Image (cartoon, rainbow, N blue to C red; front, side, top):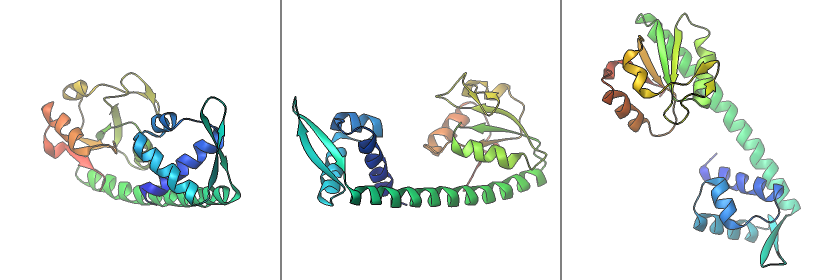
Amino acid sequence: MDHRDIRTLQLLEELEKNHSPSQRELSQKLNISLGLVNSFIKRLAKKGYFKITTIPKNRIKYILTPKGAAEKTRLTYEYIKYSFEFYKGTRRKLRKLFYELGQQGAGSIVFYGAGDLAEIAYLSLQETPIHLLAIVDDLKIGKRFIGFTIVAPETLPSLKFDRILITSIESKDDVITNILDKGISRDAIVTVE
């Protein structure tokens, strides 16, 4: 499933929930540019997925058509299928990674990133003798996640761990640079390929 299909699904879901959002509201909600929202709306309306009507105060109302509802259902199915395949593939890779780390003598690990990948990694970790020591995330410091309070990257040098697993799916290179800046050895950092 590509980004365009995911954006189409998100847009159709938003238009179904709120029939008269502004393009600016859609841009903020979907975290994409205003121009891209405009382009998507024009393309999807041209395909007949929704009708556009004007309501008072120069507002526009979007009405999902049966064709649009069918496309939303198809894309939802594809997204679920894609997510399940991602989950299975990631679990398989993590099992292999944790097995290898166990063979290398790793007994404790830190996750860097609190999100979906960290949740899958945590489930996979439960099948091993490796202990999760902490979860680090620059943007979620102090919040609770899978039973842990997320700590700041600055705490890394004070933690006694064998490896750091990057569980952030955003900008791995920036995360690695941040870890290295804390004086942590590159050999301690592992990623899911």
